[in-house]
Structure formats: structure tokens, C-alpha cells
Amino acid sequence: MLRPRLPAPAPTPAPVHLITSAQHTAQAPACTCQHTPAAPVPTAPARRPLAPCLAAGAAAVGAVVALATVLTALLLAVAVTAASVAVCAVVLRQLLGPAPRRRRR
Image 1 (tube, rainbow, N blue to C red):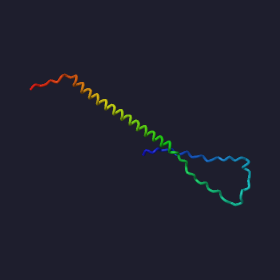
Image 2: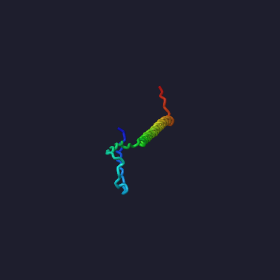
Image 3: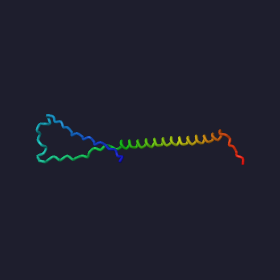
Image 4: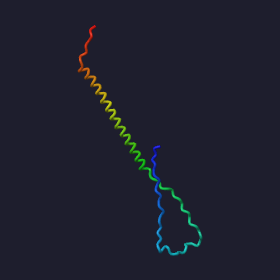
């Protein structure tokens, strides 16, 4: 599902052979036997190395983990601050409020 889609490698152009006028003159064959040239062996297509893709993926995962850690720490800091402010508010309310009246029975 999360596999990168790599573009197909560009086909390599066929080699160009230059023929000079000295090579174009008729030459006697090296042997007198009649044989056909061997068919060229197909080669495997060149594959792209996976190292850059893996390095980019590992860097992205590391960045997400670091960002999640920072955001979690900030959320925890806000929660601790809110709790301490609530405790201070309750204490100040009791200290600064009117003295409680005792009921007589």
C-alpha cells in the first residue's frame, strides 16, 4: 500500500558504430567456413538502487516520531500547568473569601 512507484528506467540507446573509409574496403574473411553470427544475449534491465528511497523513508519516519514526541511533551506541559493553576485558584479562593460562619444549634 505504501510502496513508492518508481518510473520505468529510460531505454538505453543502441551503440552507434562509425565506419571509416579504411574499414569499408573489402577484406578477405578470416576463415573459409560459413557460419552465422551468434544471436545477441538479452541483458537484464538496469535497476535503480533502493538506498536513496530507503534513506528518505527512514528520515520521514524519524521526523514524524520526533514531531509526535514534541507535541506530546507540549500537551503534557499544558495539562500540568492547567492543574497547578486550578489548585492555586482553589487555595486563593479559600484564603481570600469571607470567613465561614458557624451555625449555632
